[in-house]
Length: 104
Image (cartoon, rainbow, N blue to C red; front, top):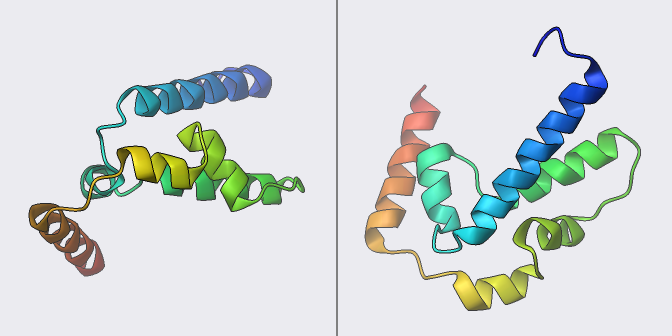
């Protein structure tokens, strides 16, 4: 991809990002805490990264609008419909991940 022109690379990256969002949307059973445990990012992180990218380019994008884009609906609605309470095992795994990250 290094030899690819910037416009094509950007288009491919954008397409991959859209595909990631589609995949997450199709797998609503995958909880944000699971993503944080396994990959150290979640849907909220993606939203924050969008806001940051917009601001770096002088575009206005607020966090709630970005979350609605990532979640495919208002966050409060997604949370009511799909977010499950974190289990003790999930909380323990997240805490262990965070401790390991601090130590590295």
